[in-house]
Length: 353
Image (cartoon, helix red, strand yellow):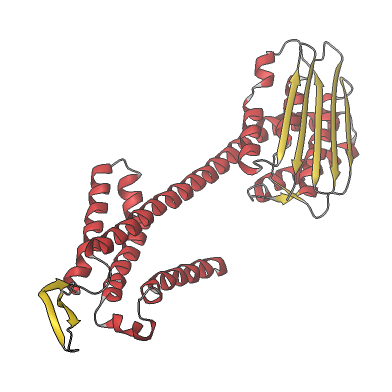
């Protein structure tokens, strides 16, 4: 609510400032209030008022209804009509006044005599200058409206895309992971290791709560994100047992720092998805280090010989993570992915909020 009130106040202030330009630019400062009844300043005030009305109508109605829907002929016809209103309505409401000007000089006796015939003249700048001035302002406002509306539309589209990607990421991670983890917990329970089963259920419950209730925010606590990764790895250990060697290390202070939710987990998931092979020695290493506001994240795994290496390098989860990094951390991250026939490594450096 406060943000909305601030935006309204800012727009009102901008409109008032724009409308005061005719007064500030009036040639005779002592007579500026004459713009209420006549004169160049009054014509400018009318033109500027029309421009403001068209600016908001264009931003909120004409651009979404016509420009974004490819109805360009109607859109530019409306713009041309608005331009004609800006150029000629002020002249109709406050006609451009002409008056006769005579040239006078003093004769030899000091008498004032008229020299030549009276000619028509006018006060202030020529009409062409006034029309071209308003034309320039209108075109500038028109282009500015298009730029900011298209920019805001792009940002909104990207935000919706991110939300859709995050929702899709949740749908991809949860069912498959939940199914495998529950199988692991079931196997543990059959071995009558009740404590391990209980711990696994608590971890899984915390992960599901985090994904469903907090991961929809733009940014979340880094501590919670790290806890999610930790729980994920611990549950994978239960599922995989001793078939895979897993090393997870973390250093640095996570408190008081924030990160986009579920941003790191795709790299970890990719390692378990493509780096686990019960027929060969498998190794997965995850290292997280925080120094001040810089996060360094490294994930390494051996390559599962039965996995398509191209799929391991360009899977949906990795592409999703790349796109989110580019959109949320432009110029504030470096991502380096290396792989060969036997190894796959991810190196991420991220400047946190």
